[in-house]
Length: 455
Ligand code: SF4
Image 1 (cartoon, rainbow, N blue to C red):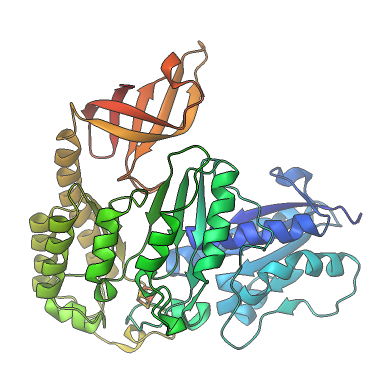
Image 2 (tube, rainbow, N blue to C red):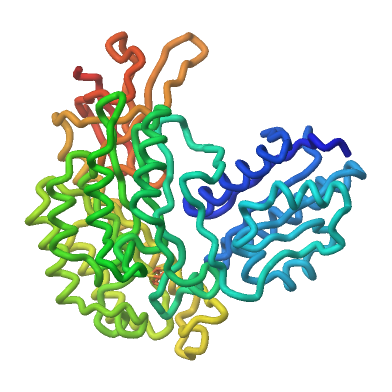
């Protein structure tokens, strides 16, 4: 196989994993390998797996099986498995899929280029590079990274790992302990991204509010946001979006920063998981319903126009009808702008794995649908209340139909890519090559809004 073999990459799971994929692509490209989006043309298939919950593992295993089938069509083809599943269950994964040529853990992502070259030159007799210790790797501003998001936005990982011990979550057991990047490293990376035309910096981590606490020197998310709020924007306008706040470490200072910063979006994405006292205790969330309600009220009081998003988990062991009823009431009362709901997945090495009072899966699924249905009504009402208002919108896509008619899709500051609302509006000459436009909303349902450019 030539040294410039072609590689295709499949990235599964969340935006944090996508950043890892981008680091892998940077390493692969730097080592002289050619990246292709066409698997039929590729010599090597890299899968960056996810292992967060059962369905994510299923998808990872299915993708590996598909890649191994692809491999059989040409003798020289190779399959490389990386990411969370490789880190969490290297032996089980090798056993379940014979024919994997190379397996890498989370500490190896930035060395994948060299490792693949060594594999091609048959320099390594070992095929699995997954350390037993918890991973410690974290990229920095100098790490080669090939962005795969649209040119106007980029994910930036501010920290890795988590020190919490939520009962249902296995992430700390394979992503490791909290380790934050230095403020200066993030400032340099984000400035470079703005310089190359990025207009939305999306800060990701397992838990953004704990950012910097591992340094023990007062570094905080608030401090980071204020530093990023002062970047030089060649094009003037840019957004900073923060994902995954953990409620118990939200400070008054952080809320103040969200309220005051010019570029930080008034978008609070704070997974709360549950609202009944029993379940918050069982889930080891370190918060009470009363404290949760007060925190939400504080966000709303101090940040006018804030968009509140949360994620909830149903079907955790011990969730009784009355706990679920409390959660339903909470949703109806708090009227979040956006809500995501997961059903519990039994995960090895978690506290909840040993619990015996399981909720039948069918009941958990029913609870998930019922919550989503209730939220759909709320989302629809909230979106319809925007009719007649003008929103600042970032344009994600311009499409042209068979008749040459162009239309645009974008998002408001209250909408993160892939998970929130989309705003559709016809193309107009006034748009030109603008990234941001003002759009007057004309109609709305639970997820999609339609409007016209008002610039
Ligand atoms: S905060 Fe809890 S749910 Fe989130 S990554 Fe940490 S342990 Fe998992």
